[in-house]
Length: 177
Image (cartoon, rainbow, N blue to C red; front, top):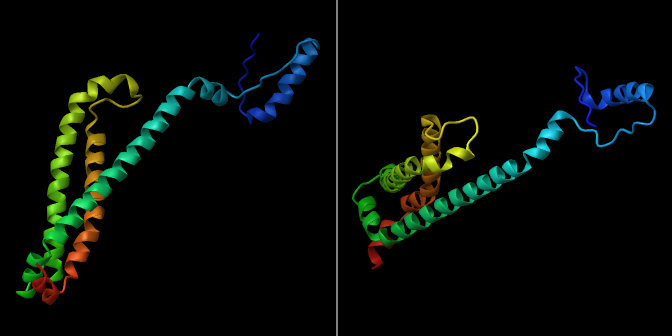
């Protein structure tokens, strides 16, 4: 037998009152496994919540790996272009110009990746439609927010190699081969 009650007070505090009413009706009815509505629903949604949590963790891991990869590519690019950047600085390029140059290349790489990802995501949305709740598979706000987030993460990943490029000493850069 299941008893469901509705209360305007704290459900845990209402338990004793409900137990007293049930006991007054029949002292032989035991009350056990008392749960609030949220707890009862939480048990039934455990698998969906676990899947959402795992997908979120894997998404954050993928974002971290993408940022680390972009950082590595840009750091390698800066190290390969040390001589060129040193020449640019020696003929008058300001630190801001070098920073903009390297960050611009980072944004181009990120924009190409985001564009490819958006096209792929839009193509795959029909397969993920049954996993979504409360949002449409092709929600433009979500796509825009994720694109902006990826570009911001790319800027942060490219900032450190760009900052290192601004500190290149022209004399040392011209001596290296």
